[in-house]
Image (cartoon, rainbow, N blue to C red; front, side, top):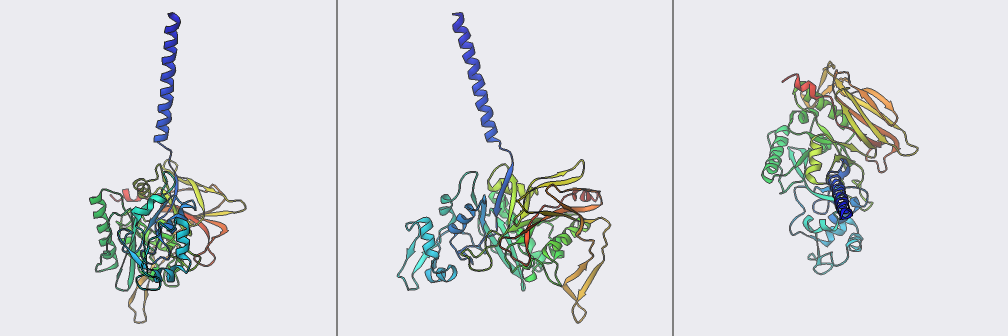
Length: 439
């Protein structure tokens, strides 16, 4: 009897331990550690001006180690009934585009109607809500609904990407570039509130058609994101004699925001802006992306991390352990090296006592140009340059902000501009205290 009692007590104790262990395991599984998720949120398909089917495009990203993808066709969502003339599809994608589509997803998936050779010979473009089930996989790959809201002010193109959008939004105009961007921002904000979801709006390729100046993007303080790298070769990443490069535009805008507008800086996105997927055409996939640090691979969690600046942009370089230590005022991170490749990190920023001299540029009649100002080299200057895999920068308190750009010795695998190397861009830090002083 005593033995039975002891045996029962031991059994009970073991069961409690096992239950506790199981509960602990479940807690760990339900509360994962943050990790890096790779994604592209600027991509085009046959739904607008791309040259392949959305499923084919999404499958390419899925099989090339991306974790999330937003299809962002111009002023349209991939939803509802849409048929396209077979002649148009073949002209855009090539004579084998349908064959490849059928080989990947099977002839029963591909819907074709009408007599070959006639205008009624059409193929159906599948909507996102039908094909996403073929591709999505928990903790590996998800699709996020997006749209490129493509408008203009006069002759200037103003394109903005809305990620995790619920309903299509047509571009809203305005009386200026700034008002146009603000009006579209408000439209997205209203949908976010009414739908109860996180929606990310970012400004696309400001140097495309030289549509948006540094001063204009600085003034739209509600807009917090823009493309520091876009893989389309036509977006004028390097600028020209009269227009700043995209990176310099970033530094000018952030200097104006922090020093003069008491506003938070812009964060930089990396995207493909891909249109061409068959080895033909110049706007190809796989050139640029963002890496987002989040516990969960879900639209809301990814966008919340982005809103907190917990991400970086890349065209080939991988980073880890990006840390801004507030106590020591130190920005540091780790570069994940490839064998035989070297890395140079430039810490870039503007100091509080920077030379504010700006040359006003005029036309032949002496009238100020829209590209009005050329700023001193104090704006976005290189504060330090570091070789190696563990770059660190100690802020002195004199910086309005500091960001880092890492450049690899390795050429970009598919360059979008001359002499391009693989890079990564961290987000600006150290700016918060300058806003607090003005409040």
